[in-house]
Image 1 (spheres, rainbow, N blue to C red):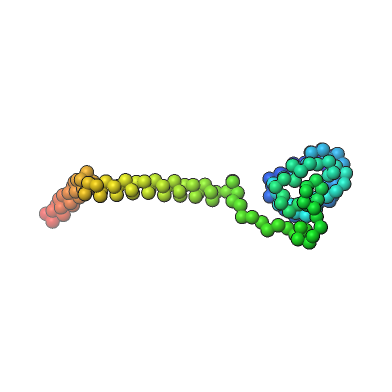
Image 2: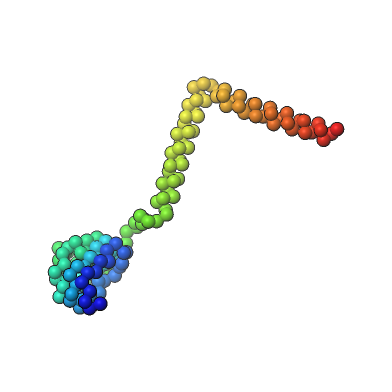
Length: 150
């Protein structure tokens, strides 16, 4: 591990302080700790002095060089309050998309049917279809009852 040249831990939801032991990786040329939940001062020394701001982007609780946010007050050393963010890979947003699509289709269908009912007075095509179906079912039922009695 001492000869490690590149370390990319971006977007892994890691939290806490950046371990000062990472400064002992003297061959480290590339470091990306962006889009995590790190807080506190950025370790200083060796290769850590050469990494730019992009290496720490998205970690709102970090302070110290190379960031413009200076460390010092006790509030900056405390972890930031976590934001409630739905994960893009989570099933929850997908379920809500399905629910909203179904709801939207239902609203459109309901409004269209309501429009037809109110403008025509009665949807004759629907009435005829239902009456024919009821008449067929009633006729079949009556025949079955008649056969059982005989």
